[in-house]
Length: 302
Ligand SMILES: [Zn+2]
Image 1 (cartoon, rainbow, N blue to C red):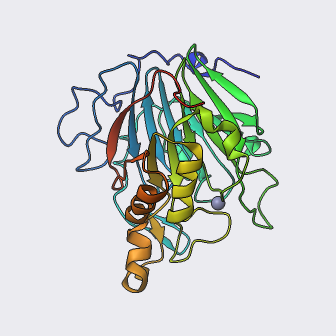
Image 2: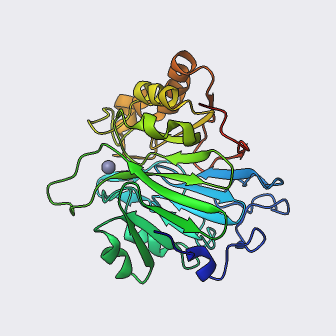
């Protein structure tokens, strides 16, 4: 099933982005997060990628501005945000938001409200009504379903292996593949543990956004560790991997006791990836950090 959602929003052209779109004219200090200016995009095959903390990634693609699992607040219950928040109002218009699952660090309606524009929210089947109630457009998907955005982009729901809290809504945890014309895709894993069926879509993955940490010193079942995430990068044959879901949310003071486990998962992932997946280029970012990736014109994998 498809929908011309981005077109319907009246935006979607490569030059029709918001004021916060990464551009060569960005002034020093004008980025979303103080001290972290976006990287300017010059090529039609570039993606500007900015990690806004936890599982929140802003992808500036040619003709599509997409955000994953927005969490844009300074706290969540007993958890505190470590690292800077985006400047108020600085995110600007986003075309599409993808939500991986219903856990509150991934599906946060207050954060959705803070996003500019009128984004289409792609979300696991069963959760769309909660998006509609805050006045945003929702598109529910199950594994295997695909949403077409404008002429160029497709977003496909792929499986994830993750647990559901007993009181949480009955909606599956999923991941997403974001694919442009003739290009290998960007994989956003959501929250997951490793699973065999990842290999079914490995040939479509060029860039992998992989969770490598958690809220505390111990990574619970249903998540990837720095080591298992490196194995996943290898299984996928990812050309580029960006470690996310680490170092952002944890109780205050915990780093005094478990500093490295909270603040070093990306460094540990980089080490493990060097062993398990030496062909993968790891782009480890600070919260707010940005990088530009030239997407491969064609998948080079079998
Ligand atoms: Zn979760």
